[in-house]
Amino acid sequence: MAAAMWTDRARRVGTFAWNAVECRSKHGASQTQYDAVVIGGGHNGLVAAAYLQRGGLKTAVLERRHVLGGAAVTEEIFPGFQFSRCSYLLSLLRPHIYADLELKVNKGTRSWIPVIGLSLKQLQCPHMCAICSQKHGLKVYLRDPHAFTPMLEEGLWGGRPRSLTLGSDLVENQKEISKFSQKDAKAFSGFVSHLEKLAAAIHPLLDAPPVDIPGVASGSLRKRLAAAKTLKPVIKCGLKLGRHIPDFYEIITAPIMKILNRWFESEPLIATLATDAVIGAMTSPSNPGSGYVLLHHVMGELEKEKGAWGYVEGGMGGLSKALANSARSFGVDIFTEKDVEQVLVDSGGAAKGVVLKDGTEIHSRIVLSNATPHVTFKNLTPQSALSPAFLKAVDQIDYTSPVTKINVAVNKLPNFLAAPTPDNKPGPHHQCSIHLNCESVDVLETAYREAMNGRPSTRPMIEMTIPSVLDPTLAPSGCHVVSLFTQFTPFHIGGREWTEQDREAFADTVFDWMEQYAPGFKESVVGRDILTPPDLERIFGLTGGNIFHGSMSLDQLYLARPLPSLSDYRTPIKGLYLCGSGSHPGGGVMGAPGWNAALTAMADLKRQ
Image (cartoon, rainbow, N blue to C red; front, side):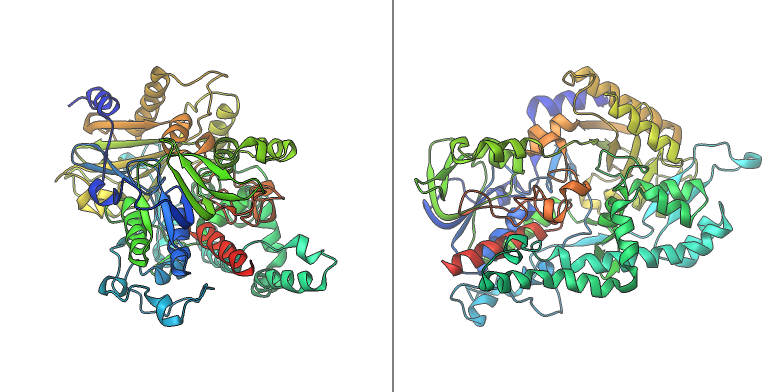
């Protein structure tokens, strides 16, 4: 069936939520009084809710959409094809969250968390039921190899175009890199070790709020001593880094090109590595701070393999389902299709619950918002409760996004000129992140400049994934789901809104480039779902279409995320907390913001 027909159908009838019956656990609120209410059922909101409930607080999650997960959802856009419609890979989720929430079988011990009036026995399982000792259904497919970059070139002596494939096998990596540079092949293991040291050192900073600067600077000895505890993660980070502190400082501040050019000389390798320094960010490899974006993308792990990324079985909604199952097992009430209109603020300036768009009031001792800071403070909080200076600062948060996500249903695998598979059977490269238009840094730079000038890139950077190669539950037999994470596209085109014609034209451009790498791709397309930055904002609540809930730029990290006055999850409204990716340590399916916010809120309640 023609792509246009399927596209039209998707826009007329909408999408089907994966496991919608299970996601819609409750529609009518069973009670209107809770200890804690979480706005938004994204992964951070679900993580926060689970820890709050484990800590003894009766908690409810209120999700606006018909499906849980926020950006980590699975949706059946075309009959029989299940898509990770927005977020599409897993790596950054913190290991202690896997264990604490029993998302899968884990032989390790539980992490300790502060609780309110619970014994250790009660903490382990408040209901003492069988489900709490079992895994909650999360299964992840580890990819190996990891990355595939085909070249657009004429093959030598009638042979194939070259390509670069990278995975977990160092010898194979060196063999691949040596096709372009023997020097780079020898240097690669040192570079990987260098990155791993820097990424491991930052882990203590992820699992704790930023340093309490006002407390440290306080005149009160009691406050100073209490605030001094927040220095421990920084000290741990420094001890782990040791003599590498200057290297750490460089990578979080420098353009990634400054670092890559020092290590390597071959263009395909440099460009492939540079893509992780700009992915999801409106920046170029030559801009300061792009080094940190790379570090952020290699700080995770899967199955104890550092920096590895994988596919969740059933799509990213499988993770959200596991988180929701875990939260429910502790006693969290989860509601879908509950659109919060406003946070309720009492006469003393403290949050006392929320009111839904249907007028229902749900009261609580505390409120945690998994929405972006912009949505939280400009849309959900009474403006009279916030100072003009604060609102002005909120307006300055950068949400610029370069991303257009295109989800594609195909009836056969792409057959790449650089790695032919004419029998429609997947090769190792089909399970990778496939980097197209990424064999040259100049290509990336040009694409970035076009978007900064208000135009979609004419040769866009494309990260292609085909999760159905490892997870056959996602598509009908012989068919596949393809994710195209493309850059660079502006939020407005020359100052005006995107039109339907603009969306289709950009997708056509992407498909034309796909066709050059894999002839026959366009005729294999069954349907496509095009999500420009405005679409990502409208559907998923991602302000500006930014997948990180705010740019991961140097002025919006750690003590300044999302603002210098708003880096500890607390807000000017007492009892209202941020728990989404707009707070420290930032974006990606990490869960750390939810964990940190829940612990902060519980600590505040314990002090009351």
